[in-house]
Picture (cartoon, rainbow, N blue to C red):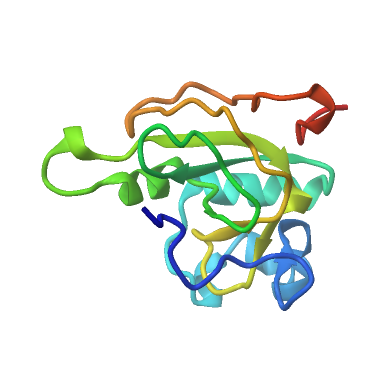
Amino acid sequence: MDYSGSPRAPRGGGRALPLTALGDMFGAEFYSHPEEYGFGECDEETMEQLRRVRQDPQARVRIYRALPPGLGQINRGDWVTLSRDYARQHAMRDDVAARDWPIVQAEVSARTVFTDGKDLDQYGYDGPSLAGLLDQGPQADPGPQRPHGREEDWPDAR
């Protein structure tokens, strides 16, 4: 089953910018009034993370992805979001909650998350693949998780 969807998520090297450069794209007022930039109401979790990155370009962000059960990974080039609520919307399969997809999450460097500036809910992940993430039901919030594998490959290894 192809769950990646299209078009492809924004990645480095093209017209996309890392989260750390949103202020360069939109200006400082963006962080206090995103609605003036055509985004409408924005999820508070997303804005909190974007503001934190603005103040600290080395900051880490929590990314989320809804995907079919048992995959437990976020790959380079995948669509991700900074909002658990937005991921929850994409996890819904139909009117039966038992069929909803799980959500995986990870904390990564903000420099690995890219935007094309079109939607504050959708981003592209351009870091190393994150395998071994636990499937969480759409309602669960387990906190940040580390992927399996060698510690030096973890995006938050210091």
